Length: 459
Image (cartoon, rainbow, N blue to C red):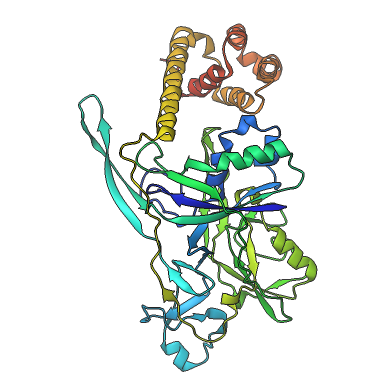
């Protein structure tokens, strides 16, 4: 696999939310997900000759972006890093697997887990700065803030630099490779509220960049696996699991040493804006977790280096084997350092062409969507009596055909309403639906099938 490194710089404050929820307290991420990088490229989905290989296989992997400081890649602080409760400057940090808890002197220090921040190979310790901003929705009609509609965002400061990798399999054709790389480089938008004051980033390739090797050879004793990116595991029955086992890690001989393992988990449900629905919930072992293994075979090492678990196309499954910072047996200090932010010039006199184009495109899409909604609502109002006998599950099946059979949805739907139990339900509405299929667009049929189950046709 070809591996290309990219630098991503925030040109504005960025909102990175760890949940698709819009109400209540929402977790703010301290890294950029691989799916966000994938989403930037996915805007050109239809231009790829083989989009399945690009977006839905392991042949292209969009890595999670991590902090870049002084041209060094940073790592999420390992969950095995513990410091005495009163050691606010982190001068006596120890790896938990080397702490002797039988020693009363050690117990008296009351070690506490370090759960935030980043480190680099020099053991510099960096913390991201978040800015909270309270906003209110705007009432265009009355030209004032809309009553009762306030919201707030935690954003990461502009000027922050990040690094991520793009892995491309050798079987990907040259045209798709070029389009893939061209789709990334330049000024792009990611995160929440991109049409507002957030989301502007600059992506550039790091040519001839060599990543520092901090891994060490395996030993006959216990070896430590650092979870560099999110990890999604499945058990032998294909069920999502939080528990790392030999089977879920796809290892041959290795065994988990639970006493020296430190993991942090979470569950979240990704939202797919193209399909307009939620995907399956994911159980995730978070970055910075440490899994202790013994009896590792050469084949196990090969498996670990290829990436483990699911969603590898979104950058999941990257691990480091015996990184140097996990092998320190004695106490050490973390040198607190401030993040060096790149200076971003404010272009006051020059119009941001990319932003204008983005907003114009968004406005055009909104107008088309509004027109389509009005057209669908008008048709339903005029013909709702014809569809009284059709159940919600039938409409759900119609919608599924429009989503997953875009080339042959007309034939699939006509066949569906003409056979079996469905034929009885569509007895009075069959002619009208077939006429709609012949005259209207895919988007009309899709929106029509989404709207009908929400209508109370008995009124």
